Image (cartoon, rainbow, N blue to C red; front, side, top):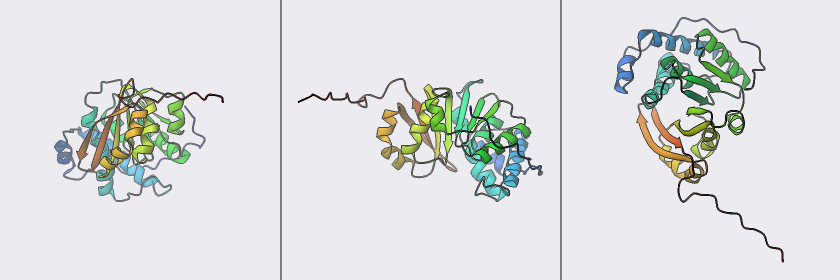
Length: 247
């Protein structure tokens, strides 16, 4: 994996953000239950994210209450879909930015091996600093482009691939699918236009051996669930090339 070219950052040390009063109830509504220690770690992460955001552009969200909603709750809507994933499985978050959804998922599922892919060096440096501060020894950061890694050292390496706010499905699927093992899941956090994006990406899904299993509505958006299969779905095989005949 590509090493960081930037020096280590001085991590801010603000007080952890307290979860909103109704946050535990909102998690229960999506069948997610976390103990107090994990919630405190999530508040610690959010506080450091917002503090570092004053020095570099990590997130457009600066209000703490919105950060709990748009970052933590949004990330944790993936947890029920990860329930069947066993301990020791590998998860990669593509285009992690400030660490969402990868870091909240790593805090909630410390039994998973998590890789955060972020090509922007300063953001990758923040991710490396914050996972060290939070003691997330099972998390690694890769400062490189996901499409390059998917064609090389990380091709077919992961049980689960996640991505949020990276791009439309027609462009995103060719980036994330090569990272998934055969049978691996792709959990792509989208907005209200997920169905339109799926229609536009139909041929790309076939070419990348990605089958749409379902789309899950959440309190903060929609999750497109894809699975990588061994072979292209029927009817989407490559057309044989025509041989040119000399006159």
